[in-house]
Amino acid sequence: MASESGERHPHALRIFLRPDVDPALAIALGLNEIGDRATARGNNGNPVLAVVRGYEAGLQAPLAAAGFLPVGHVRLYLRESRVRLTAPALLPATG
Image (tube, rainbow, N blue to C red; front, side, top):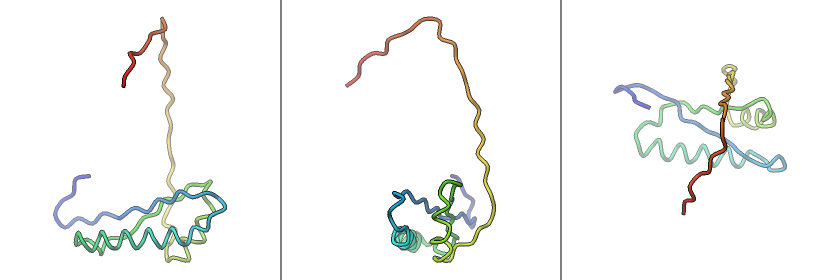
């Protein structure tokens, strides 16, 4: 992503865990890592953004406990593309 001098962009925290794992430790470790990297780069005043999808509702309470606030909703759009194949083709073997 290109940025102009002085522009502020958020840091991103994305969490992938099994449902039986407590996310609090992963959130704390992720925030520590973001903080360390941001301090090293001199951009530690930027906010941290955590995207939580609808099926990840179990992350909302641990993120709130870590100080995150909900700021909005995001919609994902999908466009299916279909291509007609007239004849099967073989791909060359690689590796």
